[in-house]
Length: 445
Image (cartoon, rainbow, N blue to C red; front, side):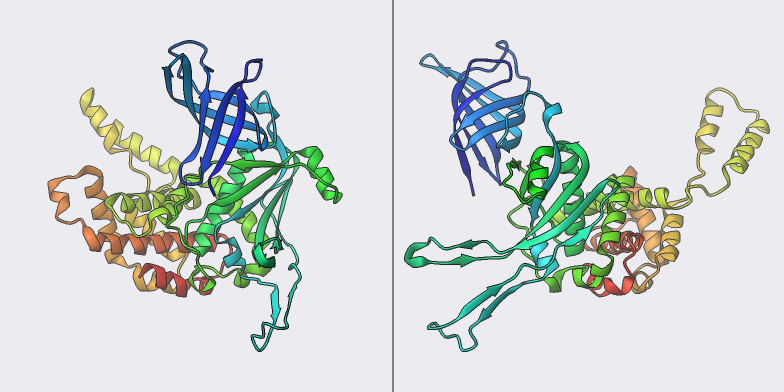
């Protein structure tokens, strides 16, 4: 829902406050329209690290607000800023004060993935004269996501009873809680949230995004754990993964069923966070296609190949020959040559080739993560087509174009390679192939 905050705005250290309005929507993000001037000089276009607001909804802190325009008329200066993050319920003077000890958030498709409803409607004959509704929240689901960190998933069912004609609304919600032994910067916490979102996107095979985020500092976390009233900070920002086209997906669609991995869920999430730390760019290259998974271009193929090569480079041997043996052979070739100057530079460039080829990487990944999908779809032709197509879309040579795949054929090749990479990642997480082979076939063939 779009939201509007009316009030006065200033920057830390200033005693001057200007009237203004902050608006926010999940599609457009935030915008502050200010009737005043926060610039230090006329040509100042620098972002404001912190803007403070006293509004009808309480204290607001805007983080990294970028100047969009300044206009003047009838003696009134108007400025517009676009904040990166809106923190509702707090005032701080510097980023160093933005540390929190816990967070909770809701995520798109999380409830559908957990797939554990506890609403029991006792109305066997659809009788509107007499019925009852029973609800008892399921037990929390604990999980690990790193040293000195702990998390759990909780459930509730908010009930609204003040509607017209005593209208009652009830729905179930699922929340992720992150707790830290020591206070952590808001940026680090948002990074942990993004890692969970990426995991959820992969297992549901639909782009997820945070629906709401609450941050709680050290003192308030203690009050919360003691079941006392506590004050929280609502964190609002335009998430780059959000798109209204991303659908609610029921369990039949998901790549991995939560029920299938629930006994190992904590171990899997811990491995996911470690893997994400180890190969963040490779995971992001994989997850990125979910933002527009029905769109294809040559860039999608190249992203998939880069992710596969990088994954192999990190997880497997990245040299064809032993390093010492290779260096000795290179030196021997140089010693036996009579080249110098530019000719020697040419030779040095040619001798820099101890990394395995793309074909060799694909062949090793096939052996290491072998399953029924890989057996059926990853063969020598895939190795050759991937090598030839990557060569063309890297250099765009006329001769290479004849061997490169294009259009639907290239899209089909990319899906097969994506299946190989997904198989490798899920196997690294300790998930058996029998739990995802059927859905991998459904989504990628």
